Structures are given as structure tokens and as C-alpha cells.
Amino acid sequence: MKGMGSRFFHSSAVVEITSLFTRKLPGIELSAGSLGQGLGVAVGCALNAKLEQKDYRVYTILGVGELDEGSLWEATPLVTTSDTPYQFGLANVIRYRTKKKNFIEAFQTKLSPDYTSEKEDLTLIACGPMVAEAMRAAYILKEEYGLEARILNIHTIKPIDKPAILKATEETGVIVTCEEHLVGGFGNIIAGVIAQNKKYSTPLLMDMIGVEDRFGESGEPWELTKVFGLTAEHIAKRAKELLGKSIDKEGILK
Image (cartoon, helix red, strand yellow):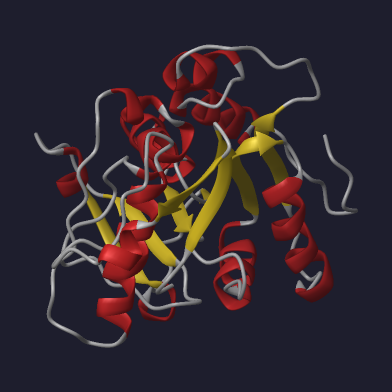
């Protein structure tokens, strides 16, 4: 990136706007502006340190206005800790255990190959900010309805963890995908994995949570999450309704 810059004309003079990369202030990698890209860059730098087993920390400074940007709102729900396992391409399996004062401490997380079925009632498959909503939905399903939910955090879409998806499909038989996008984007990817690889010796019920085909609206992220039916309460309600359905021996949905 060294020497990177841009030029524009103003009052018949050429003014060169040189990026921070050229000046290279010690310890500062990027000045990202007000659109929230800085957090994504910081996360990428931190992930690189973890992948390459390097011992350094990454800090990002965010402004108040910047915190309302969608890219920040989507990235900041805290669903991991420093002890949360991670491996590129492998989903995390998250299970709600018991009520805790600190939300994240109420859950246990394992890499998908290390997880053994606990005979859950259904699986919630989510990515991005919807992982936190899926975790809250698992809490609601357990505490209010006595239903156990396995959560798959598909943090890596490509490559996607096909074995984890298929294992959840075979072991629970009920799949609900959760995305903060037009319904069917992420959901169709999951459905494609299942349709191409599932053994059809067992039945399957599946639903997709996402933004329905409708006109968009403006508002705060938390407001739009409610408006478009993406909250944990909506997920839990749809999951319970799906579980209320049944398939007879001939494979006919009732």
C-alpha cells in the first residue's frame, strides 16, 4: 500500500491526498473514517494473529456516530470469549446451559467435530449478528417451553461446514436458518447442502427466518430487527410452530 494516494483538481491546483499508509505512523495501520470499516480491518488483523499464532493485540477506536453503522452493529454482539474455540471452515456448536448473570456465560461452545449429540429438539443455524438472536431464542425455548436447541454458528460461509450441517439435520430433524437478509440467501445455501447430501432415511422439517419480500424501511438496527421479524422472540415462535407440525410414516406433512 506504500505510496498509495489520490489526486483531484481544486482552484486549478493539483492537491494530493496521501493515505495514512504513506506516512505510516508507528502502531497505526489505518484511519478508516466514519463508515465503520475500521472494526472489520481490526478483526481481520486479530484473526491473522490467531491463524499465524502471533502474539500481538489489535485495538480500534470508534466514534459515537460510527457505532450506528450497520457494519458495526452487525459485528459487535458479544457471543465469544478469549477461550472460545475457532478453526477456519468449522462451525461452532453452541448450547444453552443455565441462567447466568453474564449472557455469554450461560452458553457452552465447541468446535463441530468435538460435539456429541444431546438429542436436542431442533437446530438453529445462524451467521453474523443473528447468532446472538439465535442464542437468545435457545434461552426462550428452553426456559419457557422446555425445548432444547442446538445452535450452529456458521462463521465461515465458504468453505462451509457441511458435516456439521448434515449431522444436525440427521440428529435433530428440525432446522431453522436465521439471517438478517432477504429470506433465502443464507437459508438456500444451507438447504442446498442438505438437499445434495442428506440421507433420506429420516424426515426433515425446515424453516427460514429472514427479511420477507417487502418494501424496506428506515430506522435504528434494533427497531428494524423487530419490524422485519428477526428477533429471538420471532425465532422462538417460528421454531415452536415448526415443531408443532408432524410427518406421518408416508412422509406427508400434517
